[in-house]
Image 1 (cartoon, rainbow, N blue to C red):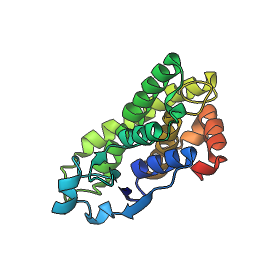
Image 2: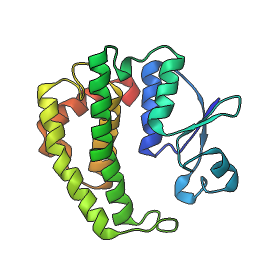
Image 3: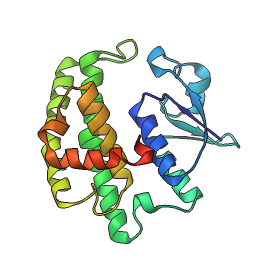
Image 4: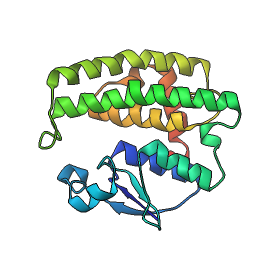
Length: 203
């Protein structure tokens, strides 16, 4: 069993943090997607979306998509706590995971890719869509701050996979890639982010 990843990639880091929280170690294979290492025919044949991370099982089964990989390990190790334990928790975690991923992380990816042109050798970059996506990120931040003013964590009073997604959205996408000072502007996000930063899995 091994995970193909690019260490600097937020999606790869999401899986890494999740596995650390579970206390699970898995062999890693580094693919530099910036240099197109994921574009060769062999990898494309294995990965349905041609991206990282991808989990390859010992029997050759390949699982792409970050949350799918996290769910596999949660079920395999009988620890689904990061996805919620009660029906209510599971519903709230699923809801907030999708909201943070689509309204935050994914919008941030679109903003960065279209504005920077980092992958212009393999995709159509539309600067106007990049600008719109960045505005959507900026509009989502006060919603996240409001949620964190009411709860210790994104989906309630327990750490969940939604926090892992949110942590990388704020720290990597907002602060670094898009230079949006979310931590400076939103006190509840900053308090939450600082709390997560102290956990060993997030360091």
